[in-house]
Each structure stands twice: as C-alpha cells, then as structure tokens.
Length: 298
Image 1 (cartoon, one colour):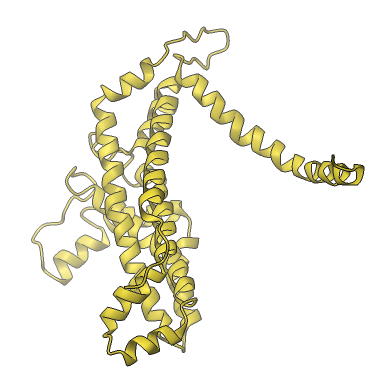
Image 2: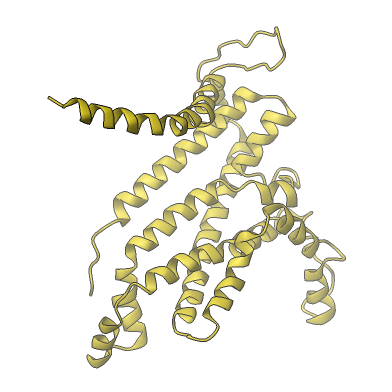
C-alpha cells in the first residue's frame, strides 16, 4: 500500500500536468471528436438549421467522387517525389558538410534557411518564378539557355502545374533532413571508418556497409516524418495553383478545404480528413513495423 507521502507526490505531479492536459483536451481531443461527429452528419453551420444524420454516407461519397481520387493521386505523387528527393539531396549535403572543417556552420545555416522561411512567402515566390510568359524559369529556358522556343504555361497546363509544387516541396525540405542526417553522421565513431579503410574498403563500401546501417534508425525516423508531411501538403498547392487548372492539382487537404469552406460541406470535409488520417496512420505503422530493425553491419 502506498504511503501518504508517495500519494502526495503523485497528486503534485498530476497537478503540474493539469494545464497541459487541459490544453491538449480542449484544442486537440475536442476538435478531433467534433470532426468525427460532423463526418456522420450533413452538417449545417446555420443557427437553427437541422443537421441530418447520414451515417457513413460522407465516406462512401468520397470513394465514389472522381475528384477525390485525383486529389489522392496527387497527394501520393507529391509524397513519392518529394520524400526521396529530399532524403537523397539532404544525404549528399550532409556527407559533404561532414567532411569539411571550415565553413560548416555557415553552409549548414545556408541550407537550413529555406526551412525557416514562410510557406506563404516561398509559395508566392515560386508562383512568380514559374509564371508565363514573364517568369524567371521561362526567361532562363527561352532567352538564356535557348532550350525551348516558346514559354511554357507552367501553372495553366495540367501536365506541368505540379512541377512548381514538387520543386518547392523538395527545396524547402532539404535543410531539415540535412541537419538530422548530419547529427547522425557525427555520432558514428571515426575508428570504424579507419578500420574499414585498413581492410581495403572503398568510399562507396564504407558508405553502403557502414554509414547507412548505422543511420538506419535516423533514416526510418526521417522517412516517417517526411511521409506524414507529404500527405499533409496544403499551403503550396492552395497558393500556387489553388487546385487548378480544372482541379488537376488538388491534393486531399486542399480538396477538403474547398469542400468545407467554399461549399460549406463540413460533414464531407470532415470525412475526407478522417480518410486521410487513416491512410497516414496505416502507412506510418507499416513503415515502422517493417523498416525499424536493429542495426546490422555487413
């Protein structure tokens, strides 16, 4: 049986946790529960108007909605392109920075600056860069490099409208992955590389058989976080294309936003958000389940 002093200590601990738990319950748990309730109704925000219970109709409507599948396809495409792009480029930069001694802090700051910049500002900047015909990219391709004869309508053509969004996603995410990889690289003992070099291992063999296995936990962590971030892309799509042209660049979150706040379909929007949450939950579980293993050196 616990003594009175131990009970007082536990009570004090809960008392200190109470403000944080209250904040979490009000601003996290309540909106989640409310959104789940809304997804089961044809929700009306007008005072005095009824909100009929429709059960799972909003969920079945999503799977029969062709625009939802376009949005889901674009979300998967964004994740499939930006996550490997960020990880590969960030690994290259981290390896280079790990081998220099002069200017490491300066270059690390330069590469991390995009992470600190506002999504709104850089989205507007990329909109200007890819404008047609007066954007910087078209100017470089037509007037400087002479690779194309006519400017490309990047933002008005469904086939090219995702290019600025994908480019921005990769460019802005390199810094965070680079800092994480660099921290992991600096924890690997130098003696291991020296022993591998004495045994005749080449640079590639040391990277493939030593660096990557020792960085596996970090790689899995970065992969899971980037996939979650990829499925939550919204600001760049909303500001650069607004989901156009002809809804061909919609992603799940932008489509959910348009349904909820443009057409006041709050029940349908809430159902889309829960479908997206379920996809992210399953993907995160599978990644951790199959990729998180003990470190093994080859």
